[in-house]
Image (cartoon, rainbow, N blue to C red):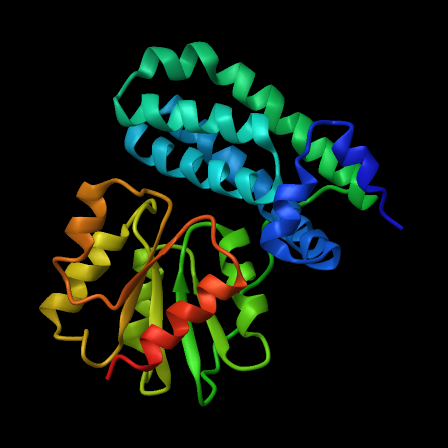
Length: 260
């Protein structure tokens, strides 16, 4: 049995996380998701830092911040937030000067998670082959660069809907263009993603008159009035703010299914 005292003694806020997840089994499953995706995320963060690509760097550290808040990694969440704000301000010097501190804490958390899960010696890769998508009678497309967020939503809808994941806006658009979407009840769309962001997907929907065919709800950790107001310039049905719980997700689904 996993010992939560290991996490608590290392500064993890288990109690706040359990308020979101509801039980320790769901929390542990989400830690597994984090463990599987975190290496690739850290690799990409480092690559964007080396390229001084502050726009995509901000998106990735924002994602790391969100994951950390969900899982109770308070210090890592705070450090990631600082990097998000400074990179959005294009403060490259801050990012370079404080990057080692962020990475030390990230690696500490990764090692702690693997110790807790009993996987401290496991080499985790992110090269699992994609399986062909078969759309069931009722499906929801979830577009978010966070594997943790996508899997959380999948757990909520597991028995009722097919959850089709997309890592960014390009994957979402490619899916829509390549598949019959008549059984897709709606889309949960993150705004801040690398490559093709949520606003670009909204523009695509507008240009192709898709809003009446596929209702769109926004997922966002950016609660600035400017971003929210900009999103509502499109005929979206609702906004799901991060961090969210199962009740919030089901509320959004009700908004989507009642849209038409």
